[in-house]
Length: 269
View: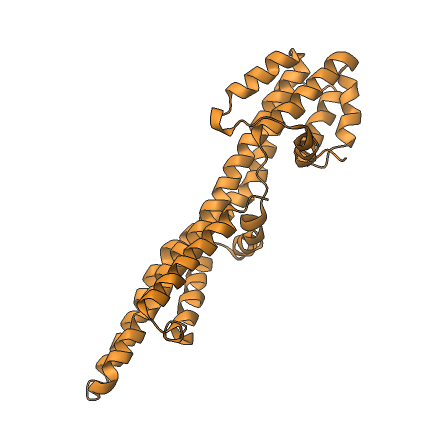
């Protein structure tokens, strides 16, 4: 699990809390139920209005993935494909059927099974590309949904502030209460900006990043298994796949990490 989202959000809220303490702001004055209910309720409501119920439910189910989604190092993917190429070169393509049985990842399992069954290379490419797009669609749909919430939230907060300021104007005859009421009116704007930038936008960006990383991983697998099917030399295949990955993303595979790498690709220990 990559803890970037958890660390980032905790750091953001920690910085906010530090400012509150340094400024001597009353925390209770910011935790007003009315603006919080408006910002969360209306933001989610208009977000759902802009999509479908099915996609909205799917998006909320993807929230845990934003915090716990795995990031598989490209080097481990390359090492796994090269090992399959070595096995296919020494034992033949039919040996990949046994490897497919060890896979937990449906994408890789299906690819190896199709190779063992003798599926044509061009047909296999089309099949894998279509499957890749369908597997990425859910993360991308969820990402767009939360990015849209990040766009709606600040405006919803302003709506809450306008409503509260209207209430302030109704009570101009009580000047001793105006300061507190005006301060409370801007809490809705605060929560709109806070939820957008501390929650919705980071979650949306994280899901998009995970989808991009997963796309890169599956692209390596796709090109790799097709090269294995074509009988590519393992060492040259490894170099070719490395050339598809930015240098900073490549990591040295350590002895202890190889088992984890294969597990991430769907290989049972």
